[in-house]
Length: 226
Image (cartoon, rainbow, N blue to C red; front, top):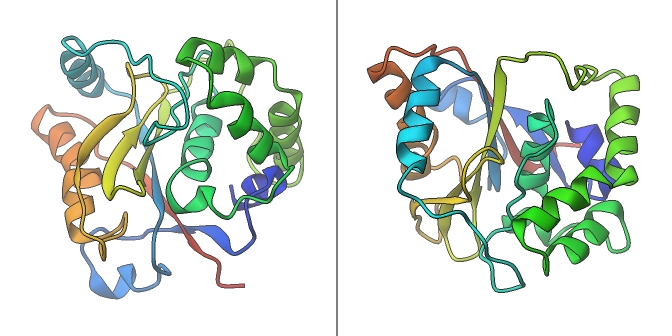
């Protein structure tokens, strides 16, 4: 993951780190701070699909565009690309956006995507050779190769971002739009207790209540230790 976002243009001052616990202070201490984003990976279950459709049903389709958006959200139209979508949501928002090198793939993508509506942004990703090439290069360099578009994959990726306005956003290209999960304090990052309660823990509690699968993994986008 880190190799891919660095290739796309994110500063090497940031990297992804494994989060081994949501509750153990000693294990949480291994993650450098501040954490700008979290990327949750989990199996898609009937419980998750039920919760997703129930929450989405009354919501309008997101249609915003322009530099006034608090977050940059991409609708996913490419099959089996949720990992790439999660990485883009982490790298293109919050504190990470401010350390993207100019004239790189990520910088150019943001510039091109900002004035577009969600449908046009999805088309932009579908036709972006730089995104596809970076993904293929990272896979050949040792990361797990992306599955074929026609394959049935039961894993999904969801990003949780702290915005410049101190809101925690859930970004998932399969939803109707970005979801504002609540307000954080100036000194609270995406791995703070309140952020976990509003985001990842809330997500897992919902799965538990609906009888879902609680297997998951979590990585944090935070300062590099190199």
